[in-house]
Image 1: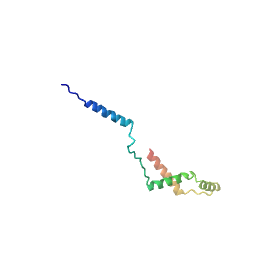
Image 2: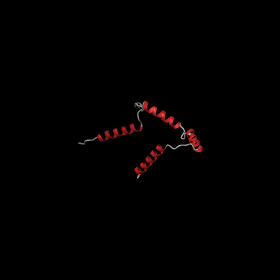
Image 3: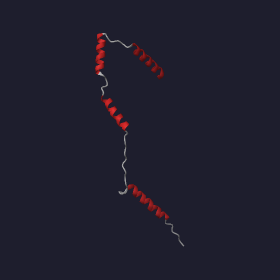
Image 4: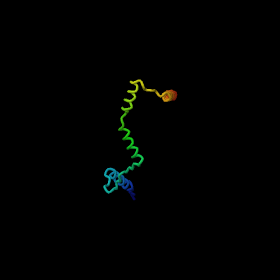
Length: 97
């Protein structure tokens, strides 16, 4: 008496079907598109970022005013602000070392 095991044939058929499904996806499959929602805060931040990017890098009117004051000899250096910046610079250099 011979016993025929056909389970390997069933397995091969299933494997072949799965391979075909991978290469030829069914058109009946429902594909859902991804959605992204941007918060109101992010929208406001984007608007502010655009406004900042539109600003000139150098404030020409301030530069012209300071240049005029220096040329006329009337520019006064704010001593407290100068000292504070010098100390801030020194402390920053100490932190980098």
